Amino acid sequence: MSVQLQVPLLLLRAFDDCRSTGVLDLTTINWVDPALLVSVAAFVDAAVEEGRELEVSGPYRLECRRYMSRMRLGQILGQTVLVDARRTTHATGSFGAQIVKRVLMTEQAERLTIVAGPSRLVQSIQKTGEVLGVTGQLELVSELPASV
Image (cartoon, rainbow, N blue to C red; front, side):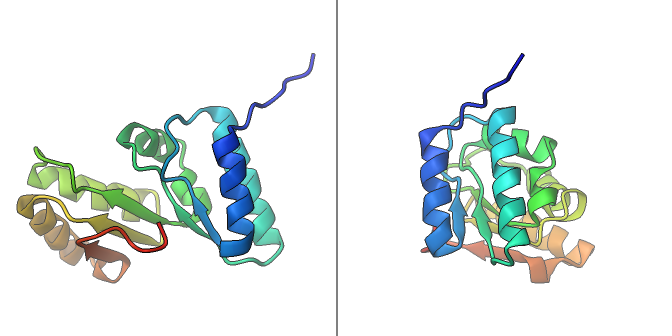
């Protein structure tokens, strides 16, 4: 019995673009399944073997980010994690602290960039970064970075 992986066309385009730009842009991925995770991990592994620098922009969709985080893809990639909080309206301070702890401490991503968000969320993220000693890995920006 053989198993055939179906890799979305969007992901194949992201792989092609990455070869020239060095940025694997997964921001528009709407669905993450095991086949996608395996494909991304294999692509990143090949890039590392070839000695290429690689920056990964994770999905904007919260469900996709959560699933990739649970599957520890951030830890595998050692990536910069981008969280777009511009549409976040009901975030509590503890939500910001959880993001910082999970992404930088548990998942051991190299960097966390958070785009905008409510002031209570931003304050919580800053305070948590200071308490955990990870402010050097934390970036708060008002607009999406140009590479996204």
